[in-house]
Image (cartoon, rainbow, N blue to C red; front, side, top):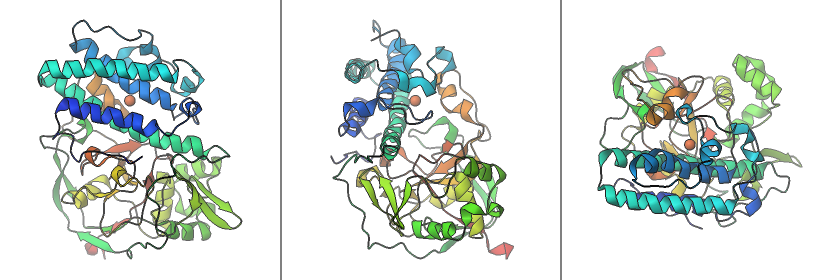
Length: 423
Ligand SMILES: [Fe+2]
């Protein structure tokens, strides 16, 4: 299966964009067996069939019910099963318990998706670009894309925790074991009053807005991501055994969860292997390190004598960069040795910035306000997208966010350092 995806969703008629994205979710699940859809491999990773059903529920609840006259809900009990975290929609199944539900069946989930799709296309075609409907449909499309990343990362977690180490796809674009990463170099940025945040005409989430000024001191940003080989040096130097490199909470997390290497790394007969969506493979030293928590990223940076960037430092460096790289369309589903100054793709890059409202952010009422606004505490911002992010989903201003102990997303490390004026 080769994933096909248009470069820009905004250039498509809304109904076409809707159908294209919805079909991709099902295309991602094509290689699965029926049993794969039901497993919940950890409390924070919902079963695959739940993601497929929840994204349909999102359109049904926030678009069809309020805006399609005469629409009849598929099953009124789904509110309780498929509401993720919307307090305005009432009580719901605990997220950690979703894997206990054998019903609805996978077949019924697909019937639900088809039922919603038929009504959605009818509504989009009838509404003739009515702004409220168009903006909700667009939000739902980007929401579905976020859950597509969850599909990939959850499949990897389910398979990575299975002793059989199943292969999701055997036809992926393979790693090139002879490819090398460019040498580590730095780009300098001068102290200045910069502007960050989104102010264009296309879609952006509310947490990317408003555009605002922020002062940055002189800083330097690495031209490429930290590689597996460099991270292996940290491991071999006793990085996981030495508390001097670790934040207090990071050290506690590493101890309590017995971290000795990134998630999915395995030492077999003295050699390092990694689990990928193409099955087990040898660790390639020149590929970017992946599946590290922010705590590990920060410990590595301290050990290396540098630091992680802030999100503003990252965004200023990315502002004029083309949105190209090892994103979903390369069909590798695994990081690859990056070219010089490539900021998009491969891995989400941890920053030290907490996910907080930008100056001037206004919490909107209802669904839009609950989407991101209530998640602005105890999460750190990640930038740049990963090898499972569609190109048409990522932007220089895009703010992803996770708790700092998260390892199951495609997360990696770009180093920053003080600028020249700090000597
Ligand atoms: Fe969701």
